[in-house]
Length: 238
Image (cartoon, rainbow, N blue to C red; front, side):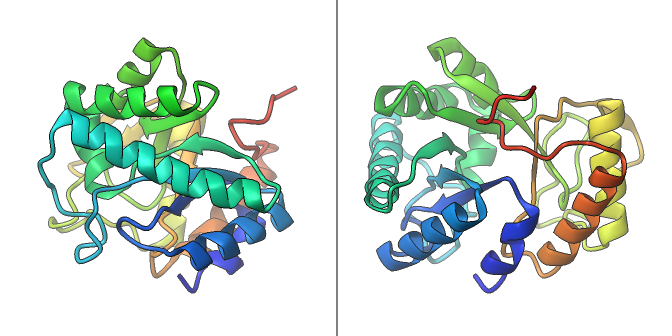
């Protein structure tokens, strides 16, 4: 992704594709090195094995298959990270796997168990208030409620599907307003104009977004002006 290096100075954590929907061993190596150079926390971004649709198409697998595919991707990135002297600290499912797990308790549990069995010290990132967060807590993981700067929300707290108009937030000022509302007010305005409560512990920006770098610069500047510290969830806050 052309934005990866440009984003590094503005972020505190990143999620690295593990080869199933994107990436390769060489790209993972390069990204781990970049992250370590910038002091950015490294996370695995497991997905469905779907390079054709960039992991953004809903697919059906058994819980055993989900467990195995997540475990395999964690192993792939962990080996590369350790080889470079780094440490993998969190896991965030990607795309359709993430969104399906937000609503499906059985799927969420399979993912959470795979993460816990691989390394119970890993943090699990999930859509704020979702089944994935609940499943992570149930198996004993530390979870991180994630909110989105560049996506709009539905009334039930889910993300607006990409197939619908207004799903993506392309204006950096609008993205910044949404982030500030979620952090400072614990609320988000949905696509239809209603306000719903939300818990913001980490903010996601999609690195493949056309406006990702502009969003990152604008959001970080706004947070710093308000003396809001930007640190990875894996770093103790004092």
